[in-house]
Length: 182
Image 1 (cartoon, one colour):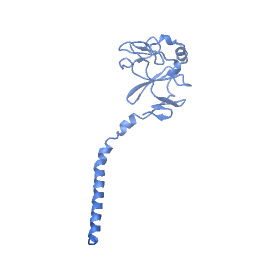
Image 2 (cartoon, helix red, strand yellow):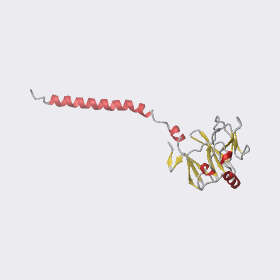
Image 3 (tube, helix red, strand yellow):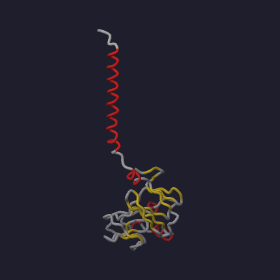
Image 4 (cartoon, one colour):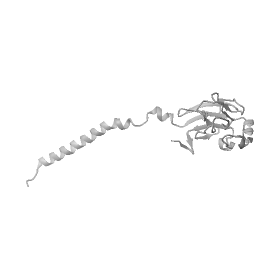
């Protein structure tokens, strides 16, 4: 065979340049489609952990906050409520749960719970009912001061979201063990 000479190198260069151009073009066309699959900034921010400043909350006060679009009750229990809630016999509850399972150790005066009745999702009214807690105006469920269901038809206690105490005056909802919850 004859020596290819300069024509062989031009052809090789054209194949490489065309291939590189096609790869760059394919990447440029695919980029918007791949980027559209990522959540937007508002969605990412909605799932981020939420910091709550506890300093302005008075004894007995309930503060409502929203995390991931869900209502969260943050309640500062009075000393009497803490004492009374610790003394409630478990056999008087629909969904028995000891006081220590409803609060974080060392922070007995703080309850953090989802704010929807476990029967049909209604929002119970604070400081109402027979048990110093919440009463559901729709179907009559009653919860005590630490969110334990005491009168039905709600089948279970108010659920607890993941949270940690960043300090004595700061609560972070959406974190557990120092890491954000997925």
